[in-house]
Structures are given as C-alpha cells and as structure tokens.
Length: 195
Image (cartoon, rainbow, N blue to C red; front, side, top):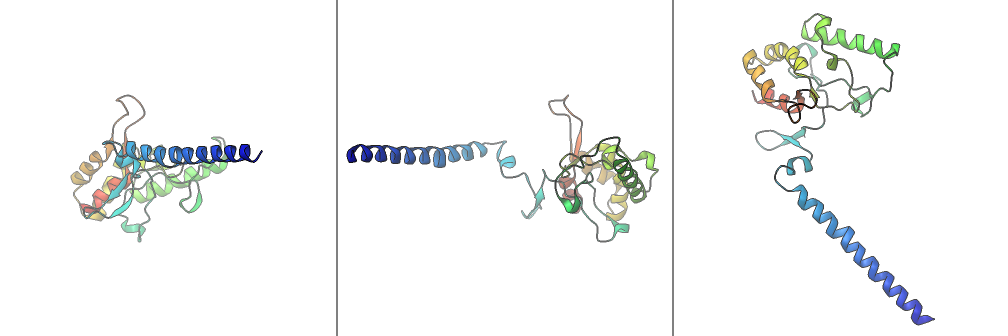
C-alpha cells in the first residue's frame, strides 16, 4: 500500500513540475517572444507616447482629456468626454431617450462651442458624447479641425502647421473601408508640444 502511495505521489509531482515548466515558463516565454516581433512590439509595450528625449508621457491607446491650467489659454486638443467621474473608465449606460443624457450633451455642446468660439450647431457629435470606455484616445477629423484655430492662437504656431500636425496624427479607415478616419489626441498633443 505504501509503495502505491509513493508511486502516485511521485507521478503527481512529476506532472506538477512538467505543467509548471510548460504553462508557467515555456508558454509565457513564447507569448513574450511573439510580442517582440516587428510590428507587434509597440502594441505589446502599451503603445507608449514619448518625448524626443525618450521620456514616456502616456499611451496612444488611452485618451485622458487634458486640463489646462487656465481655460482661457488652453493649448491642448481634447478627447471625447468621459461619462465616468474623475477619469475612470466606463460608459454612462443611459439610453438615447434619457433626459439626463440629453441635458449632458446639451451642456457639453455649449461648453465646447464657447471654448472654440463657434456656433453650437457646428460642434461634431464625438465632442459631446462619451465613448463606451470613456478613455478613447481618438477623435474625428472634424472635431480636430474645430480645435485647430484655438490651439494655433494659444500656442503661437501657424494654423497651417497645426493642420499639418493634425494630418500627421490622422489614421484612415482600417483596410481602407472599415470604420471612420480618426485623430490620435495623445500623439497630436505631444506633436503640438514639440511645435
């Protein structure tokens, strides 16, 4: 009886060691190695956005709406609003028939129109509606163009230069036909900072 128990314990320990090596060492190492392939390494590292000196200042995958020290001299492009408080992730879970949602969108439209000095009717939908996560780094080219004049005025950059930076931060449709063109705000703000 003791020899049977010893054999079963030894077999169990061998399986434990084998699976620990296979699933705890070999598999994670293989996944890491695949993530280092050209074209994948940037995404695997979190798509960091870095200054020219190499300092990581954020991620191209996470849009945190910048808050200017003085709203009257706001030099930044803004992301979509977040429905969650204090930059937390999450949508509002309000239906399109919700009066609370309609009130929030109306207030956001008025604030954006005031900040950009335009008629509220010219404010694009993504400027006033939150994304599902609340941390979407991308905005529409229309929302970026709406902000060009203010950013150029506050930063002192020529309007043509700011439009060029917007064009450089714009990605087209996926595979040429899926989705809509987008502008990555973290990368665009970094470019504006560099001039």
